[in-house]
Structures are given as C-alpha cells and as structure tokens.
Image (cartoon, rainbow, N blue to C red; front, side):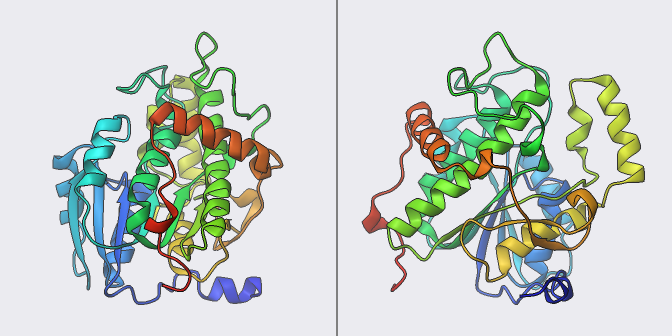
Length: 309
C-alpha cells in the first residue's frame, strides 16, 4: 500500500458496528478522541478509567454516535484493580487499546511498589492485556512514543524501579521503550500460539493534551505549553495513529505514527523504531521480568482464539 493510499484512508474508520473496544485512560486527550471516533463508527466502547466521575463526564461528551459507550473503573497503578476489571469482563473483546499513561512525573510508586511510570505505562498494561487476552478476538494496540528513541533510552534490567537513580525523563523513556518491546514479544507469542490476534503499537507524534502538564520540571512545563501552541496537533489528530492501528488491516507488530517531519504530526503511516525497540532478546527478557513482577503470565494456548477459529 502506497503512502498516498494510506493518507487517503487516514481519517476513514471502517464500520465498527457489532465490535467492542476497551480504551484505557479515556477521560481526555487522545484516549477520549479515540473513544469518540470508534463509537461514531458504531462500536461499543468501554472507557476504562481510574476516576468514574471524570469517566462519566467524558462519556457524556460523546454525542450523536452510532455506537454506545460505557464506563468501568480501572486503576493501572494497582494490580488488584486490574485483576478486578479483567475478572468482571464477560464476552468477546475485539480491540484493546492500551492508551493510559503518565509522563515525566516526580518520583512516585504504584500501590504495588513499582516506579510509577514503568508501573503504569508498561506493567499495568502488561497485566491487563494478558488477563484479558482469552477474550480478545482481533487486536491489542499499545500507545508508545517517539521518546523511546531519545539518547540513553534503555531498559534498566538491573534496576527497573530506578531506585536511587530516578530521573523523570529516563523513567518515561524506559516505559515507552518497554511498550514497544512488549508489543514485539506479544506478537511473537501470539504467532507461536497460532492465534489470529495481532499486537500493534502506535504513537501520536506531538499532540496537545494534558499529559505534558504534569511534568516534574517547571521549565519543561512552560516549554511544553509553548510547543503545544506552535508545533502540536490537537487530540483528534493525535488519535489518528491509534485509530489506524485499531481498524486497518496491518501486519502484527506494526508501529504507526504521523508521516510528517520528525513524526511530530501528519497522517498515520507505518514508521520505524529504534534498534533497542527491535531487539527480540531484550523483549523476552522484559517479558520474563514483567511476569515475575506482576504474577501475571501469558494465558494457556488453548484459551486463545486461533487463526482457524
């Protein structure tokens, strides 16, 4: 498929009637924009959110949709909440969008003692995905970031929680690199299991959302506000790579981002990733560490939808 053809379909979401999607972190930003677009295309969309009040307000903003929306509580910084959400799920799930995240925040820990950015952005979604995977019928889309390419970005295997060496950007970059390695290893396991489910990743480029407003650095917060006005796409444009990955017929392990300069804005297209994000050995090592930390493992092969099912 040529880039021109991809551009012509960039805002075209195929009919989603009869399909069910879960979007984490759907209170605002690209998460809510993705919910709105999927619901307008006919899907039943579950907003998986930590704050039910804000989630209900977000759901109420989706008007005139052909599909329906629903709000359920999910705190990705709490493994008990993740298990409760997954245990309460019944029936099929066509698309899981791992969108929620925190960025460059002051040092903090999840309820289970994990560094907050790694724990929320990666471990929370790792656990959620594996617990829901027996119900998933089509694909898992994980929202990553161009930050995985930043100089020095790596997985600190000997100190995943960055104890005594925490730096907000290093923690964020690690978590976003983890998102891509997770997608790579998840697809390998799905293929090995003969499953028709696909794992894909996407990044929004530079999208103006409230994510940047929580930066630990006042200087970066100011710079982000200026950048949001000058360079950024709005949240609807920022959601297009996620929607493209969620609805188009793409190969497993695909990575989607904007096609503009520096992948900061533009129409969604397939993009590359760093060498570190393409390393299958690191991907397997991270998967093993994530299983040990969360106590959640890849489901039994017999529980997964197979290519012939």
